[in-house]
Length: 71
Image 1 (cartoon, rainbow, N blue to C red):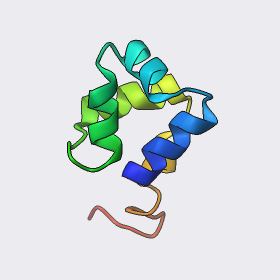
Image 2 (image 1 turned 30 degrees about the horizontal axis):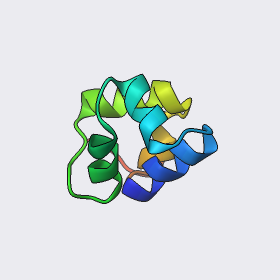
Image 3 (image 1 turned 60 degrees about the horizontal axis):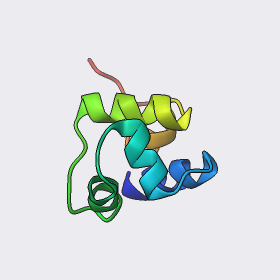
């Protein structure tokens, strides 16, 4: 997911500092997430989705598929 987060940020035309300002955090926070040094919780992921304008499956697509069953 870290690669997708970075890719989404770049596609949104934001550098780490601009993304951090929109998120209300520091550039270091974004850097640590993108480098895998910090995990993203579900609430943070929702914020990234809104800031970067991407749907959930953009970030989770390689982890889940339409064939996965919850039953």
